[in-house]
Length: 186
Image 1 (cartoon, rainbow, N blue to C red):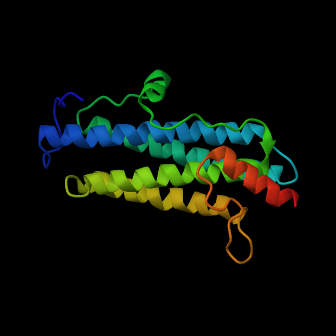
Image 2: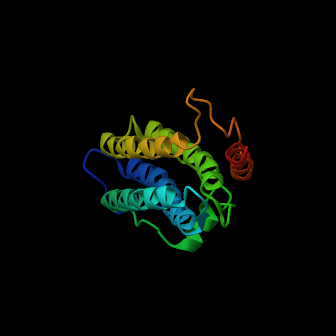
Image 3: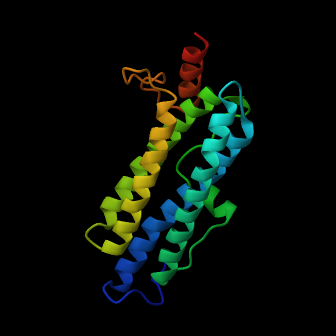
């Protein structure tokens, strides 16, 4: 990433560029998450349809606000934020969401895996900027509060009363969806 034309007074040009690069990865991830949530919203079916369908729109709205805040922080650092689909696809390090029309529980199982990845990467980003830029760190930590809350909403549909997840330790969306659906149909 090129050095910014300017940066906030407490950061060097290089620090501003480094922080902006970290933020660009989060911008891509959150844009992808907003699209994924909408995709699920449109493709969820079954007896839990309305609960999940209506749960997702506020999450989409909140994630879109996070995207805007990150893009504006990048611009504040003197770097142009990039929000085009082509750049998102080119730069992402994860696979496209893999579940189409399916049951609410299957989608929630897959979404559990998605949220784990987004939250883990957001935590790493917050840690990466912690010593460089308090403002960016605070922004990312604030986002983590909401992302973890949304993740809890998802997991509440997948947990037994004893706290056992129906998805177990699934590492892929498809495996998590299959495990969640199997438990729902048992």
